[in-house]
Image (cartoon, rainbow, N blue to C red; front, top):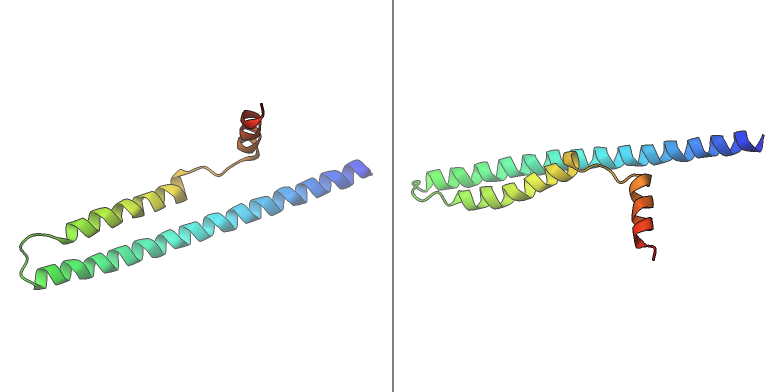
Length: 98
């Protein structure tokens, strides 16, 4: 009976952890979409200002590239990084022990 209760409790904890991770991932994906949208709108306006000013030296490239690097990192951290697992935590704890 105690074994069944403990197993049920462990399943509930695992489900809660999965739910928290899913919510965190969904928030990161939503934030990335917003970031990308702001990037596109802002840089489109900068390019329009450049074009309306007569063209010439394409100065918006500096904003496009520097902000683009931030956007790429944001995308990588959202889609490229794997979540921290219990195995990762256990391995780090073992490394820290003398």
